[in-house]
Length: 430
Image 1 (tube, one colour):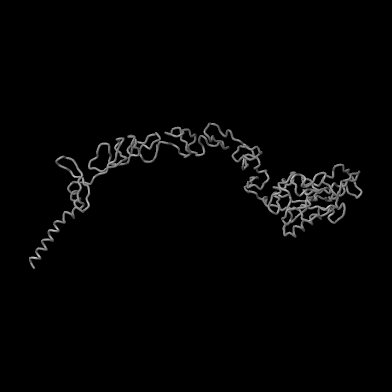
Image 2: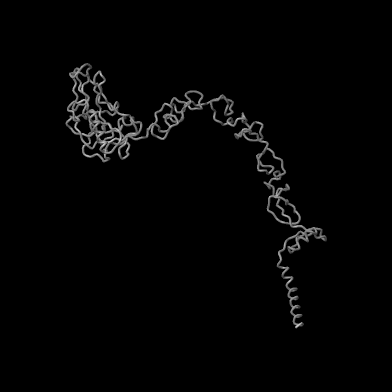
């Protein structure tokens, strides 16, 4: 048994000895710079990692990293390699920001040339004088425009906008020159002007100024800092009546209340259709001023809307009162109070001109009392007018056409018929 044990132990030792070189071979290795005394130079040797500390302790060292120094200024920029001694054309740093120019490196002196000479990411620092930061430099600056006439004011420099302030803003030696006071010619000047109102908020648009009327256009037309104020964009409803009425409106021939009765009819139609608001008829009548009845057109009776007039389906008939009374419509008033297209009879009682006035009763009408005691006589009558000294029957009974957009939408001088006819009414929200 003892011999067998001895044999086994001997085998184990032999195996261990045989395995030792293999184990050593599997250990990680590292390059080390080793001094060769015979040649007097360093060479890189590859040693097992556990042996590195012993080498370093005897004067060896780890390889160093060097960088190409193409311009030979002692500062490298790459590519890099590792070695024991720095070769020619290399540096032990990669701090050069321009390896093609030996005058550019971290040790260089900054000079006035528009280049980062000392590789600190700043160009001509300490040499360019622009104290106010307006991008223009003083005459004694190393670079830049070198013509800032006031380097203490960022608003003063060549090319600045000249404003009315008694200063040469643009450094051209002239003060407040060339200021345009009213570019759009609307009589109002800009805040930067040297004269005038100096309160035009848009001097490129003659329609925008403090004296303009506000329009529904998303613009502050009157320069009061408010846009489309005053309900100017609120639309007013207009429709043509579904019902037909004779020209007497229940009061008989030559009645003087025709426009008021027509108003009542429009209001009733609107209420029956569930429309809110107050409605009046596009009918001109008369008003008694104490001196007798005078023409009383819708221009006198209506609220003149600054906003659009539109049908119940949203179609705009006119942009505002001025557009309504300019002689034509943007779209015919051809839908009823129940938002249905008008059909059949298209004639509409109006007695009103395109401008919203009652048809003129002044032509050939003599002054003085008439048979019924009033100068000028009745303002709502149907049929052709009659003229005689002291007696001028008002030219009424005019009608327009609901399918028209030109002047005939409210009537022409020839559109005159008797009160026995049954036509429609135009009804306008007030």
